[in-house]
Length: 205
Image (cartoon, rainbow, N blue to C red; front, side, top):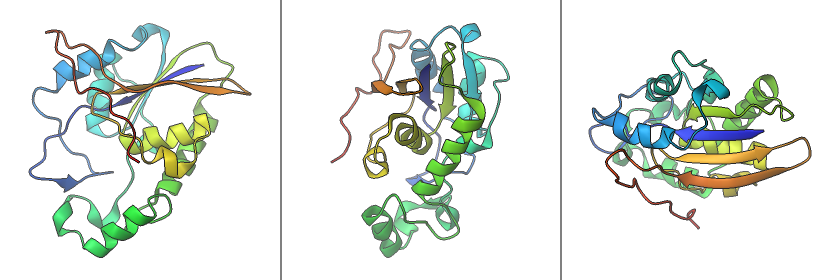
């Protein structure tokens, strides 16, 4: 089974906000970069499609396949009391604790990366079958893509959590019953005008 994991386009926020499970709008010109990402995917009629229910993903998914099925387990990590706050307004001690233990730390009233991994694992068990020859396309968020890398490719959570994933990027994984491979991570397509989006960067150390 070939699985294409697509991160949503850039969002429109005022300042550097923490937004995870909150629904925030896309930038007005989001479709150009989105179409470049879609050029890396299989034909829509040939693929099984799933999307996060948050608007920044459903708009892109519906550009690929109208009324793509939603699954709440594909939503971004819930940052609890940090949601919709400027990063600089969040207590530094809390942010430092999260950075020090990015897998297990849970923001107040939120969820940890480990908990995201567990709900993504549940989605995988319910929705997907590795023996299927039909490609799968999932429109989702950076945190969920990292969790899927941990679940499907067997990466240690603390390694998967450190990957850099740009807006409008595509990550491709091949999965069978007894093996998995990562074909590429954070790939961007060629925009209609011939412009490359952000070049892939290596994971943070």
